[in-house]
Length: 304
Image (cartoon, rainbow, N blue to C red; front, side):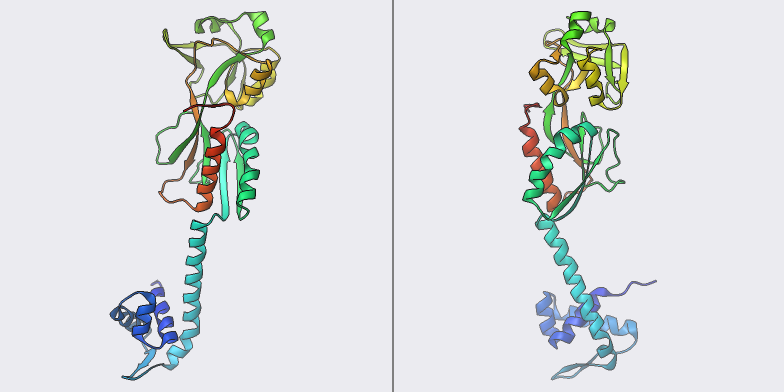
């Protein structure tokens, strides 16, 4: 099936409105021969003339009169579509679909949205929270927040802020089990572990003088959500490697303490990732910029 020649019908509608090829060419920013060829193309396709042409005037044939109303609506709809899409690309409005990890989304992303919504009332946000890695393109997401080191992919990424990983435990745990002085000591401690940790079962550390060290720790609780480890941590049931954004309040009030302060687990970062393609609607860019400004100033954010 051959598609309709929408461009030619739009040109015909403007010719019928203005009454001449020259005026139509000027209004559309094209050449007069282009207008003439479009009309000729249409007439050949439908097998009948649309216009009566004389040296002094141009009038519609019966076929042209029958077609002009629909052609005019076609032109108007095309102009309306372009205007609407252009407005959305320039002025933030429309829908943004966002994916984020569960705990981070609830505690740190959701509180940032009211200020964004107040500033951009024509933008609606759909927030999908899951600790599993979502398919951004297949899931129809405009952006996703990912925490950690990113795999190579065709997705676009922007680093929003750094995040320190800390080895933490409750004072009661250290009183009972002792405080490790070297990562190798962790082999005799109780671990509370995150199922989606990129390092797997091994806990990795780096020391400025002593270099790198990797150790396995017996796990007494394993969860696919890092925040689910917090009650056991606070109850003194073991040690955990936790992102600072999950434990900074507990550290501040002394409910948790950092172990092995000279040994630093690899730092991670909060990234926003987006589908491939250079251009993004204004609504998406506005949300990304808002998150970048706010998260970089978070009390737990590591300096870049």
